[in-house]
Image 1 (tube, rainbow, N blue to C red):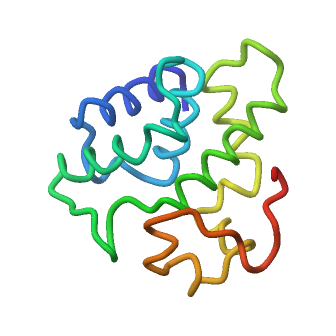
Image 2: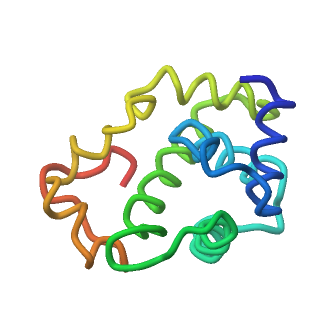
Image 3: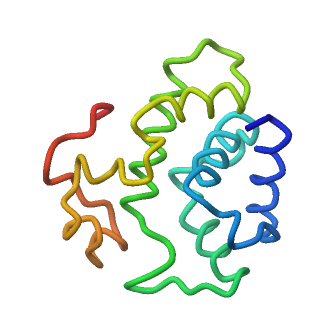
Length: 141
């Protein structure tokens, strides 16, 4: 994915104009990396809950106990993105960061199940608040 493609996805997400079909696993990570690298006034760990909830609603989705925003998945993914960025030289572009992330286990959309059981991660509790992994600790904690 190029810097221009990442910027288009991320700005579309922020504006609520990105199509629901484009909001994929790869789009989530590319957006997180772009925000971390290009939007210093946004603190993803603080701001993503509201941003994702608003985006979901903009495409006709709902944020409920069974769909929409998921706190544990979001925070774990942000930790993963920050870990990838920490391993790159300063000045890395969003495309370079995204390529590095896609070469890691996080490229697999089911990567979280190495750390959380499906039951725990898909629980209402994990959707609403951070829940620690129950299978093994995240390598970045």
